[in-house]
Length: 264
Image (cartoon, rainbow, N blue to C red; front, side, top):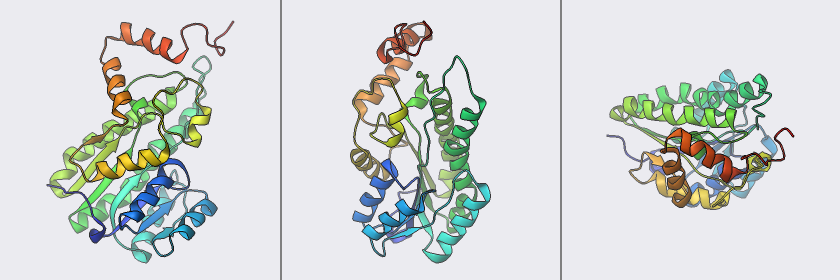
């Protein structure tokens, strides 16, 4: 059976490392002895991260939505920095959707980054790990993937897809030595939350999220869901019949008829 990766097995690779959870996680991994390859579009932010950890962090800037670029990036990482033992596929965007006027471009951009960005990393990564007979992949989804939320028609759908995909991958790949986990965090203080207008109970810092993740990487958990007070409550809510939970979600998020964005 697959086991958690350690720094003795190779390097870590974190996508979406230029800010938020990804950036905080890089600091945590380095403190635990990992050498980390970092990927995002903003090369200057990645360079600052690498300068904070000389010799421990290497920059490989790329757009995760670009299939060819991601294949080239993985090849460059393994050639120039070392074999990837742990991959945290974290890059994501939150683009709020007005359900009264659905914009196909918002859905396309969301899925290009949140879903296809993960697929583009997995496509070259899995064969490389299988060739070594071991590997560890953590896919960052969201508690929003449990069920519908206002303005999250695109984001939540992309994150639900990641949860399902991670389960499918684990079924097939764990017997071959590859460990697959999925994280479903609640609200985390990141730039993406600035576009999210409804209340955010139990919000935690990116640093606290990184602590949860690094602990979960060494655990036997399939799903890293945190903070538990919120995510377990949310799962219980979505387990209710839809005729009950949909009005509750409206009320808890302020979309019960008095929301300022509703038509007058």
